[in-house]
Length: 372
Ligand SMILES: [Zn+2]
Image (cartoon, helix red, strand yellow):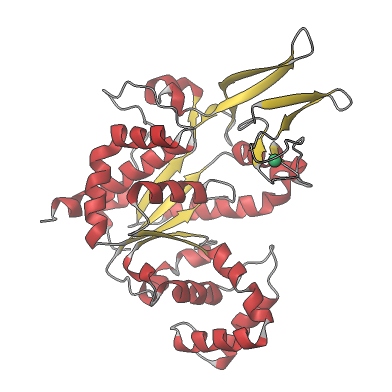
């Protein structure tokens, strides 16, 4: 990575999302309001970054646990900046896209030919090794780095992605792969472009709640969350003593939503992976001479009043039975403990994206200042 000067671009606190002079409230659950929010809080940064990304490109590596919001943040970033010069690559999707290919003899032969022409496979043995890894992959083992590099190269080289700023989600996946970033740069002809590590620091209780409290409509498959994103209709089941969501999708008949099997274990089933991801984050924090942005999903409750606006805090929804057995819903900031045991609130996605914009701007400011 080639920008030594920004090695120290880690000023705390990251969660200072309050902007002096921006006093109006934004309803961040509405898209237009969310866009007005970015404009109010980072309009200048967005315009200057847009100008910069028109002529320049960067590679942004998203490092964070599964369910930490990488896809959400990238999508929002693309909405703000336009898909024309920002693209997103999910390594998980690239791998799944090849599932069918490696099972189909004709498509497999074409794929092998692509690998021969690419820059990663050195020999027929290499190609066989990659194909075998793809055929026998499971969720527990990481694909060989060689294989991930090859798929990424094929997804970028010779496509219109080659000229865009890329957000890469899913590489590096472990400490070993962190040192392969240089190799990937060379493969996709980005030796001279900047890369940025975006580290998403998220308490395990957030991920746990996203899984444990998730409810799915059995009919239209709409996904909601009984604590964080309820529907407008909530019922109470006397037998199980549980409040439940009723689907309110206008195109659906509105059945009771249910938890997916296994979701009741929350983070439990993914704990090993979460811990691996956190170890990768720790390594990424130690790297010298890299452009690094840390996005914090949470804010200590004692700091929230000073550094954040109320509407930026994720609300939690709480239920009780009223006098006539009707469900009474209360909305108040969702409070939980972070990994260190401190009481924190969680940020809505928009303030996290705001921090991403502002930190990217800081990294590229010297180059923006040199634009004609
Ligand atoms: Zn439904």
